[in-house]
Length: 68
Picture 1: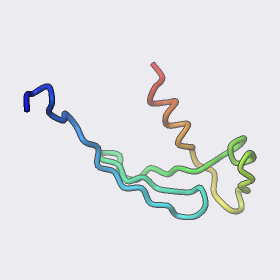
Picture 2 (picture 1 turned 60 degrees about the horizontal axis):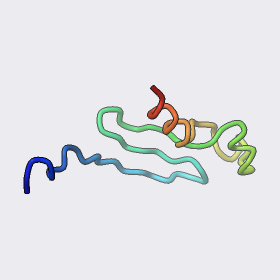
Picture 3 (picture 1 turned 90 degrees about the horizontal axis):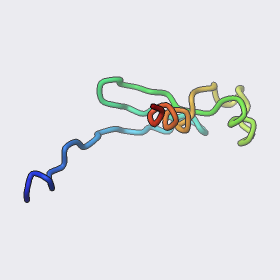
Picture 4 (picture 1 turned 30 degrees about the vertical axis):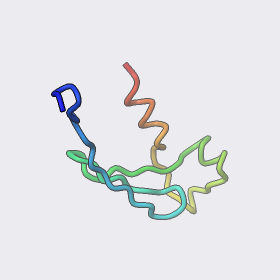
């Protein structure tokens, strides 16, 4: 295997589903990050704040990660 074939980084995370859309990602460096639904996304999926406390969605994180 040449150096060009070597894996430079492998992410080690653990995802824990708590209830409904609420889950916790266990990430290197940052530790626990909470994910869920909020506002229009919660409304779209019919999730009441009484059922699941609002948290940023995975989509929010993807948009933030890919924004310049």
